[in-house]
Length: 249
Image 1 (cartoon, rainbow, N blue to C red):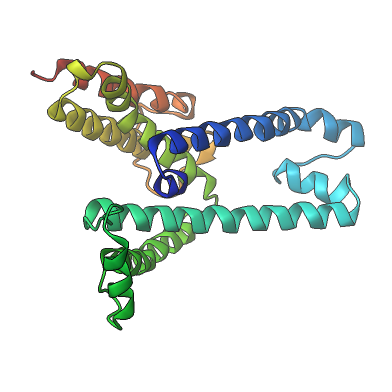
Image 2: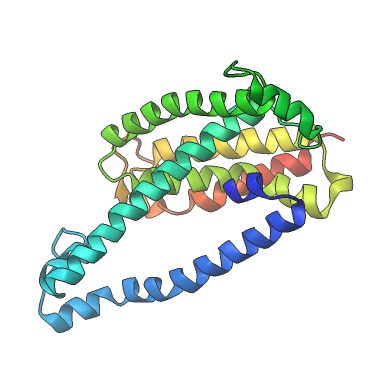
């Protein structure tokens, strides 16, 4: 989102997103291969991970201390980077799209200079956007801390957030981009609501999320077992697709 907001034009935003996705593949694929090979790596070292995360077992028993310190420092830095990026992105979206504060990029420069000379904190639209974004960061951070205290393995929340985005936005985005004559506001809204609600309901009914126990909100039932884990990721977008196609036009 930051790349899109900071771009001068749509072409720049598109290039930045492609470069970012390419970087993710270049960095992510090798580390994914290492993660998949972790059991054999630990076996060759004669180390058993037990119930502990394999990465921590490897850092404790299989690498020099200085390398373990560097890796843990990188994990902490990446966590802070991801956290502040999520807070900033969510706050900016709330300020721009929910509150509705927009900056006129085509306004004459003398108007901005005259406004900057004033001592009022929120004289211009840019000042209002900045101030509102900062204020929105407070409740967003508090909400994040609340969920972090409720769930020991916060990676589950990240997976759930991506699943909800996939279920709610994939179908409207694809149809709106590649088949705009078939896209309507009612169909998009229906797909967003049914997809996200379906994913949330299945999250509450399935005891695990990608093998992580659901300690946040689980409703015991005899129908959904851990064997059903993973399927909600595909079921929710399918429900959104049916809703989108079936919506009246």
